[in-house]
Amino acid sequence: MPCRLEMLNPRGSERTEIVYREATFREVEESAIPMTADILLVDDNAIQAATRKAILARTGRNVAVASDGEQALRILEDIGTDYPVSLVITDHLMPGMNGPEFVTNLRERYARMPVLVLSGLAEAENDYTDLDVMFRVKPLPPEELLELVRELMARRIARTA
Image (tube, rainbow, N blue to C red; front, side, top):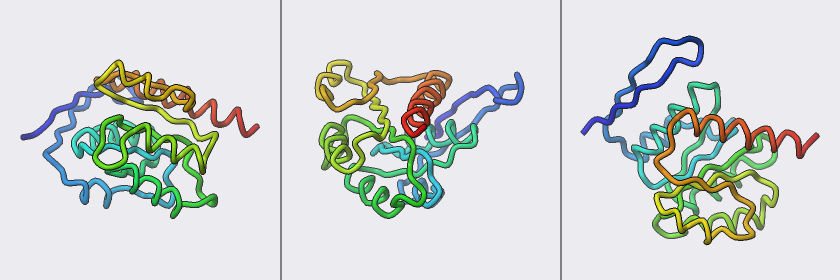
């Protein structure tokens, strides 16, 4: 079943309609450019991952996609420090390693990495106490996602300056 998303063109006021068909994670991952990614998106829902990736890519961001926390940690390890990821956006509920477990593991290796957690469960925010994340409840309009990304990326730049 196709999923439709209407977006404003960032260079003007015209609207663009994007139609997604159900994608497999293999297709989403193969379209990622992990060695030059500045954002790592972690979500077990292929349609949501593809939608968010498209929204972020339209602003010039290179987005790598992982379907779970274990894969995300492997991607970060493979990327290494030559091409560091500047931001991680993760889902809360995922198979295997859930959001809080993933962020805890992430913090052991990347203590200062900005993290945006998205969840359909408002009460899940309590699971991230002391993990230094920005938490938002889904659904999240594209313009709000882009504003949060700009804010978190600016924090990353400020920390390294």
